[in-house]
Length: 225
Image (cartoon, rainbow, N blue to C red; front, side):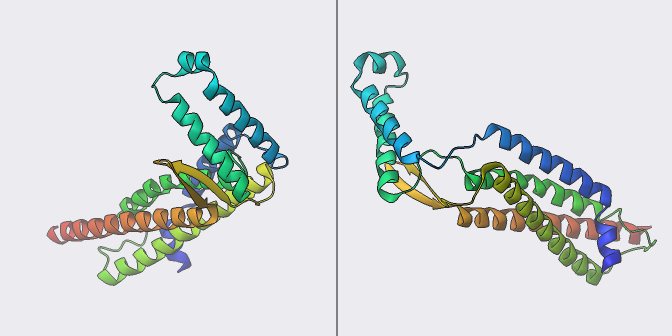
């Protein structure tokens, strides 16, 4: 097993992955501001009153209403603020969970890594085998999927640590949004789990299919010669 893992994955590849994804995570933490959770209710009420004044200010609306829907947009935000205050869900707040759920989406790039791993299936063998059997293929697919899953989990853990260090505690796990004038809640840990499942399943399928295609093409080619 250890030998197979060494064949499939190189140390250099992991170093490159870590550098790329850590760099992206740190860059993202710069662009997502940290919001102090204390006093969010007072700030939200102030914003609510500001939006209310904007709606009532005909000159302001006339100057900035580029699409003819400025009042509608402001009313939507007021509706969100009122909902957030009633449900005790901070409005327009950036905390560790907001950062984490944004950062893990970067890991969709791992699907490209999974594709590369599938293509590398033709080149990693250093034992001089003429061809791989179907049994070898199945074992390699399973090992590849397990390592891919562990890789995602490690980056999840890394990003969560960055989130805690940069943004503090992991309180306020729910956020809100509005679509078609309907307010909805998002439980962010569940959203992160769904993202994980999507990245893993998509990457595993891409990698496995590539390995199968390479296996069929290479073995058929070698038999001809």
